[in-house]
Length: 321
Image (tube, rainbow, N blue to C red; front, side, top):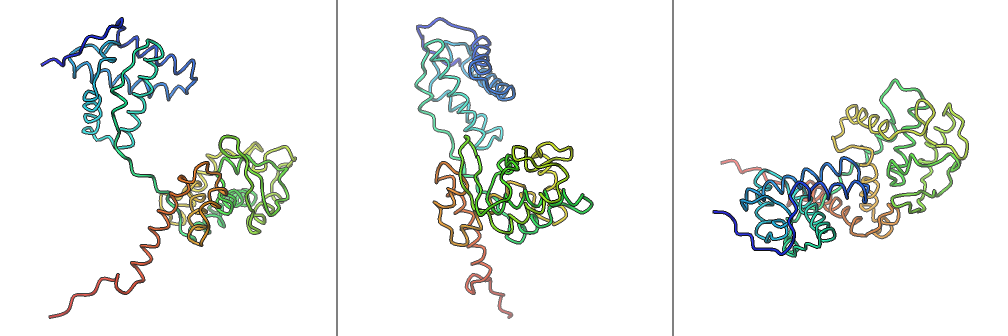
């Protein structure tokens, strides 16, 4: 039986035109990346296709404006039944809300029903830290054998700053040679062009100084500190590739990535009694809630240690009869 759509006193615009106008807005006025606009296009097209079948009417402006909360829930439920996870469903819902906000601005067509939809709660992503020994091995080795000495020293210095100072790889590679010689602290520029001061451990400073001494390119103060094979600023892909090789060589898990060293910095600091507020400042997190994710990592480690060491946590062997 066709779904009843109440009359809405607004001129109709066909669904393809509505979608194309929205995507043009995203690409032109909002200047979103091409791939992002493509993703929005796929999401909205899939939604319109479902709605057209669901209400047995083309999903033009008038139909879109008249949809009820039950219609939106039916769409999200259908996508869940296809195997989409909570995070993906939340992303779809976010795309629909962006779409409907645009419909209201562009055609003065409001649909308050979508505000009634609450997406599924997704579990917070718990950062995957390395063990202390794994992080140290990764940093100290720098590269699998066969690389030039300056390349091994460079990789060790880059990874040392990620683990020893909790820097993002992008922050490490943005450092200029004018920071040399490293003192007890370093000013770095993070997300949103925000600067912060981070302490530099003596061992990390040693790794950087060793690299600087071996680097075959002139390190002018206004030039990049970390260089690629041709002398330009080091590309993060090179770092990722080096860590992937080390991961296989050392038998580390797939979660052992350059960014995992930053997670390890925070987790190991917290396990050693570090204060959450201090760790937040060192990492450059805008919100404490972002830093609080590391408490889940630390708690998991404590439970594991407790299960392994506490006498009553050990499984007793069955009595012989």
